Length: 220
Length: 258
Ligand code: SF4
Ligand code: FES
Image 1 (cartoon, rainbow over the protein chains, first blue to last red):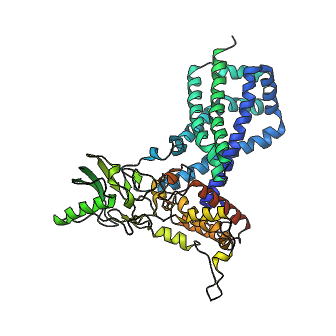
Image 2 (cartoon, rainbow over the protein chains, first blue to last red):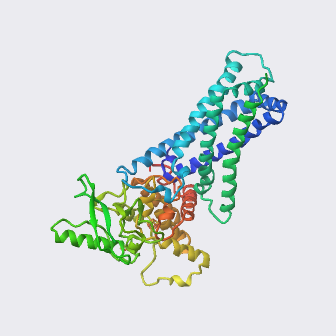
Image 3 (spheres, rainbow over the protein chains, first blue to last red):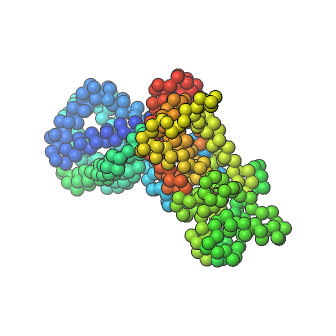
């Protein structure tokens, strides 16, 4: 990993893995929103994602690697950054020159990570166990029923909303920041920044909407 | 005006420092921040106490020696000025002002408010120059055409006075704004292109070796920089470094640990 020993190389790696995850998020959202529009579409798209070999055995491992890499590298950088100021200021007015989101990527990142833990426990673990360990016969309609069932508990809804608010903050800084890291800062950047900020609000809000919608429209 | 100063006092590099409180009176709004400290020191000397040690030289915003963290911000609350150009009219009667040295592992405190910023010199020495034949056949720089935009941008980057406020303001104590300014001023000119690859690789490597943190694009540096260097400069450095890594002589980055 000699190439990743340089500060800028690490920065670029953070940006690329981040952009990859941003892209994944859009794809995940597109599938999820169908659950509100038409459960059958949701089931069939989920069935495709759950059974397609390329998705399961190539894209899924890449995604897991992307998440783990982004998290581990973020942590490595955080440790280095903390070490580069051993004696702290008595007075440090960060809020006069930068945003909360940009100063606290570790906090928002950690909450998102905790959420991913819950998310895996909720969906991924039972899914994989049923598919590859217990080998439950495949029912191509179970996706929607399960999804709706998961959103019964108000506590879970609360946790989801909280996590998505922090995801919004993480994206608010991270998405546009990744272009800066890749050296892309020119006359188009302002417009792009506008788009990234819109995305940072829209996607998490969309996920929150789905959760609330399914919560209040439970099938009995 | 009457003020309460809380100033970091530290005997030497090894000693443990602390904030000491000094009440001060008779400060005029037209005084500069350093003149205010002069008044304080005069009083301290008259009382037989040790004066507060702080860095300064030109007192007109061009040398970059004055370096104080004033109320949590490098060079104080005003924008685009150095500490020596900061007027006391920015403060109100009765204010408490906390004065600390710039903090970074790579900027160890020498005494009181003075820090050792030679890490910046070493970054500069690693590649912040161009090699020119001075044997008598030197080509006049003005005979090389440079487009106006690049010339202006290069001059803007060259305005960096190496004060270290970017490091001081950054939550990560990153020196990327400084290093990028020093890389940019050459990267934009034809004279600088010749050694561009090595310059980007070596200066970034030295920056990392000095123990500065990694940039996370908070943008605090560009707000606090007294010379208006912006993140555009860091983006340029990132591009320079990436292309240098790809085309560079399989040097430091690819092979050895940086
Ligand atoms: S980039 Fe600005 S803040 Fe940093 S050293 Fe240069 S002049 Fe000072
Ligand atoms: S003393 Fe020279 S810049 Fe302030």
